[in-house]
Length: 262
Image 1: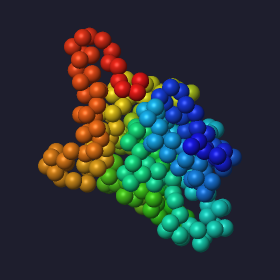
Image 2: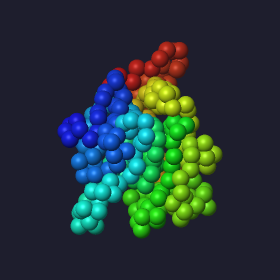
Image 3: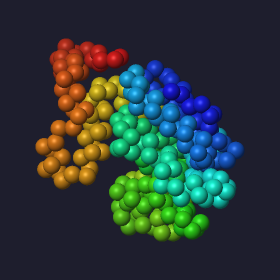
Image 4: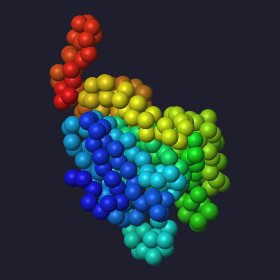
């Protein structure tokens, strides 16, 4: 099902989905309608076998997402404190089960929940104008939707603590230096670069890519030895598919592989 509220745009280009946060007047800040649209978009990515990868970005040239809509939050404190209230980051959690690769194309501010959403993606490409930070402590809040726990698992602890405790922003160049983003490009090259990476991913077997992502995510909570001896469900699916024999056969025959579902 495609998003129905208009706060998220959903487009298809072959096997690629482009998902755009669409509240530019509010720096793509997050409220319940955007959250609902985003969930519908990623349900389509997760459940549609013809989609092999997704790019997530924001409308306009100011922000990927400035995080939670604090105006809405201040007017709806009862809903904010409700543990059942969905947050955007949950659609990229292991429990949601979207094993398609997701690339964040960050085109401006990625603050608070916006940064949490970006780091929940598999890769991040950043425009030069981008800024990254967790300003929650400056608002009497905490980045509890994946910020404090996710950031400290993706970059060195001391560097994560600096961002978490100061609430300050860093620019794209510094984000690349500390390993927070994969690539920094000129502003106009952002989506072309993200698409280039997606194209490289989609040259691979979609079943192999999804099996690898699932193994990385689910195996991260296991010891190395346990992860090595665990056969995750999508690896079993891969071995039972035609892709498992098509790849080596295509290599030996010096031709491009023909993946199932292509």
